[in-house]
Amino acid sequence: MDDAGKFKIFFCEKYCYMSLNFQLYSNTSIYALYNGTEFPFGTQPWKIFNEPCYEEEPVKLIDLNINACNRSEFNCIDGTCVHIDQRCDGRVDCPDKTDEIDCKILSVDKSYLPTVPPPPLQSGRGQRSSVSIGINILSILDIVEVENIFTLQFDLTISWFDGRLTMTDLHWDTNLNSLSAKYLEKIWLPQVC
Ligand SMILES: [Ca+2]
Image (cartoon, rainbow, N blue to C red; front, side):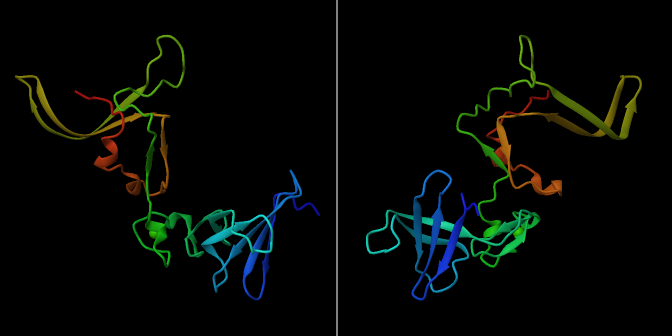
């Protein structure tokens, strides 16, 4: 059986340890020791050794995560699985509340320049970024024919693509995807006179 890239977990009386076998590239094994009294599910501190004797000082201390969540679930730090839609939805679902920690809808790279428009989707001389504007008239409030003036109530929609930004933790309920003023200050916005 090809175990390349897989790992094995052994539970011992005094402690449990995990053996990582990188057989695809070499026969080297890395051993990780967990000193907890419970099963090491969720994110736990592990000590990494080159040998399984654990008598020498560990070469590294790392946080490893072991969980049984599937791809449609969010893995709470304590190992509990909740549906991915419950991540950053404003309600606490994980017993340790980690589904509502570090929620960030928008990731802005340090190299981002908010004064510079996003690059156009098509490169080439004379190409410009595309900004679409839509107006949905809700009602006509007033018409003054003599002065050629009319007053409308409308919704204004402006859309553009900025490939420099990364959106995360998005929801089907778009009301949960609104950007706060804190984010809007960091990104380029089209100016509408
Ligand atoms: Ca939640």
